[in-house]
Image (cartoon, rainbow, N blue to C red; front, side):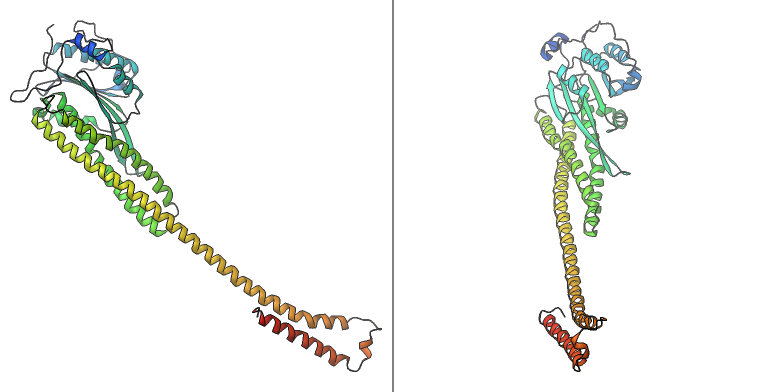
Length: 388
């Protein structure tokens, strides 16, 4: 079978991503795998129906086939002279990824990253294949949380392979949009990569709006004295760290793509699209940085308000304690004053016959005078000490 090459779009520039001889591609990639047109198609994996979200072949911007398995996709792509395959996978098995690697000469390091997931956003080139890792995000209204997904994209001369880990982004909508714009899909795999980047970046907008609303609510709760707001600030701050890790590398990635426009002869229309995506990413990254700073400031303000509230409560407790002490002083003073006549009266109220003062004529006035003198003395003593 004759070697397949991408047919240039009439009136458009030739793209830099172009398949060469399979043997040279295998040598450049270093993994020893080559795409043999005469090889027997691999048997479909039992998990094809679960992992292959959708596979389609396109020619001149129009879908010409919808294979039901990876084996059918490989076979029909070999039969197309100037077609492009777009394969979408969701959490594929190791066997499926190895099958794709053997068929499309994917580098083993990129395949390993796609298997393990949990990668940072990055862009790497292996020969004629571009490997892109993206972190998509979506805002969940009910729990008021940000859900992050991971997307791996292999872009070659005549194929695009997407490996999705997570619910976001919705690549079905991306495929539908591209199929409704055949003039854009005619530009080849680069156009599909642009559409995926655009969808991921557009998906950040609802997240930014949702986070902004959460921050506004948190500010209200902080100044309203809600004790549970600290936990919400902490959780949202952690989400913003993840959001920042997803958006910040995209700025450098898109600038790297733009730097290769001349080298890889990227179509001028795609250049404009990618510049627009880069502007949106820069704006989003700046907003996320602002969110992190705002949350840090809110946390500081909340800590200050909590400290002030605690100080006010402790001051109120101290004042209440002081007032209680004053009352105790008064009660103790009057108790001591009243105790003196009670003591004298109790002593002379005892039933003893041999008490000299009982038969003393001046005994009663003396006892009354003694009780009064003791009471008056104690009163002035406590009064001088401000106990009364």
